Picture 1 (spheres, helix red, strand yellow):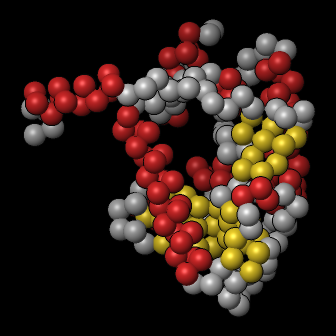
Picture 2 (picture 1 turned 135 degrees about the vertical axis):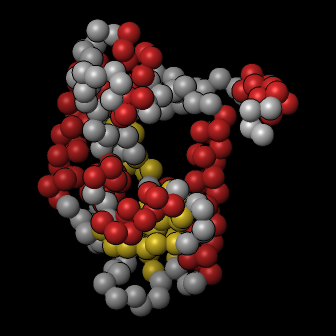
Length: 229
């Protein structure tokens, strides 16, 4: 039924009515720094993203489930730091981050120490199961990098609590992410390198020279990137 004219037309009308995406981040964000592709990190920072309404709805879903999980944790006795404790600014304001939360107290849970960074994700079932099986490796190393940066810059190096909601079943997975000082330093150095190159007008290398690589096909900057030879 998705191929029926009425469905296609209404979706087209929704897309036309969707406000243009705006690059509201005039800085390099900690959430993007761990991407495999250096050029994608640059574009995420400096260029307007191109997201259809459906993808924006996925982002909104993530924010919704983050707040739902936060309220569950609060009801369970966990206490969160105020919002002004969650931000960091570095490199003359060009590198910034905002953690989902810092838990400052709560129930006695084995190996959970307070205060600790709290990071939340909402993922489809396949991705949720991958993290359940293997943790923050492979495609999800970007999350490990993000957490390490928050731990370092927010001076909160106890193991972080990482919560993931399965978007298909609403199952919740919670795991501890020990502080990786080496990874945090590597990501910090990477941020400086990207900032220096971008300010100098230098485009950093792509992850691949194959425009049909699946990682490129999934990237919202694909068209712009491959115009630059």
